[in-house]
Image (cartoon, rainbow, N blue to C red; front, side):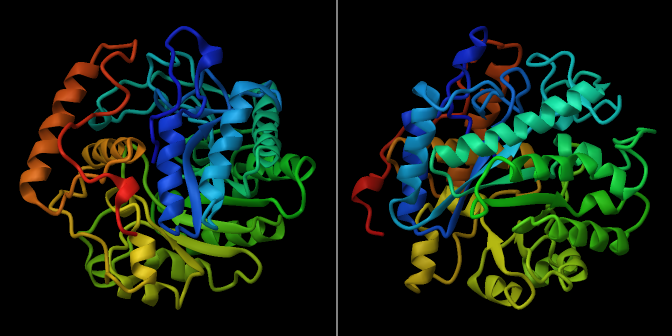
Length: 409
């Protein structure tokens, strides 16, 4: 999930992707809410390859001094003040970047993304060359070193949701005939080379995890053996944790319709049970679908931890309230959670409210859902054809909302 709150300039590339005071303030509030591990949204490694406007960016030539570095240091410090760990989700979009941002993207192969539901066209990518792959490895390794020097506790490589590392892992998007395509060992080669590049540049205590998709193992049918093999290799290469998620822009797997999902809450627990049993040193996390404390507790019989996204955009102090037994779950939102584009945009709206010290709008009330849905639709309409960002990086809402700085935690 992206905050869309970093600096954005359409033509001045070097000024893109710097943490703003708003973004830092949002993370400060999550830290106040006693989140155990705070994970940033997409932090990109190239100024001209973004998932969206307003992404955080650590370009490969970014020095360990200056305004960008100082702001990343401040982001880490504010997030950690109440005991949370702060990790950055480091990513490259590959083919999954809007065509107006990058008309000539790279990917594992030249398979074009068609996802009209996202409301933006994507250009046809070219297969990454050997030089491209070397630059990618350097970019990820530099970002890890940069973040450790800025005070972050670790990083997560984003290998899910259709971004570049996921494009290499997936048989659907990786049609290569060289050493980076074909069998699983080849398709994950770039990830292991990135891990080795990072190892050489950070301390042993710096956390390195990865987010992977369940959907990559369901091209024709579910392939648990390959998933088991992937996680075993990740463990052998000293990944500290694996987060299991799912879906791409073309097929989001976050779906409450399945009976097992309704019964157990989490979207990906069935998948997790099949692959985490043999993990001993690498921790396992699942994100997606958790709403009640009971569902979380039940999941912890199988995995080591759970992730919360949209619930803590609604309730930044939710973790604190759960730990103090004030609540037994998150607010039940009167929102169609299967509408991926809508829910992401609304979460951005709520994060922006947090960033401005306001309690996010309560989506448990149908009238509020109607209001924000209308605002998001209007925002999408304004954004069409607007390459300058003047229509706003996120939807916005005005009104009389509780001040988070005086809220009782």
